[in-house]
Amino acid sequence: MKAPVRKAVESALIAAGIGFVCLWMLVSGADEESASAARGAMYGIGLAISLIAHWTYMGLAIARDGRSVWPWVVGMVLLFPIVSVVALVLMSSQEDTSAQNSA
Image (cartoon, rainbow, N blue to C red; front, side, top):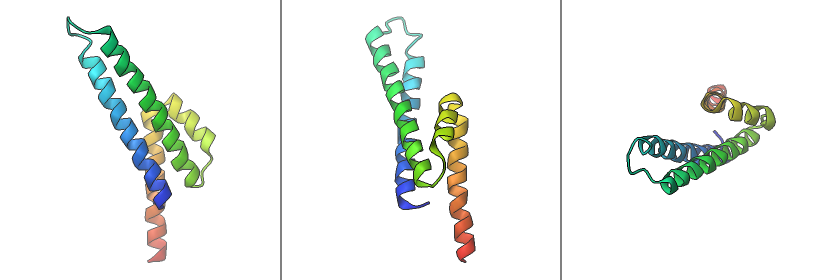
């Protein structure tokens, strides 16, 4: 992967990781009897912000990789984890193909 693409992918993966942590904390705290509404709201806001950041950074990575952005972003919003994984696989396999061609 090119350096600008790799930086955007790394940021997208960090945002997704933060989103999964927020989701885990939101779900695990839901069955407690002393669950605070404010804490649940903060985890929900954190989840929303991390998803938006993930989609934004993945869009940047896709654009820097030379692909059409809007179809990928719409796909990521509709089918969140699946399209993100497919985009990451395609971007990483392009690196492998260019490395094999130069060898």
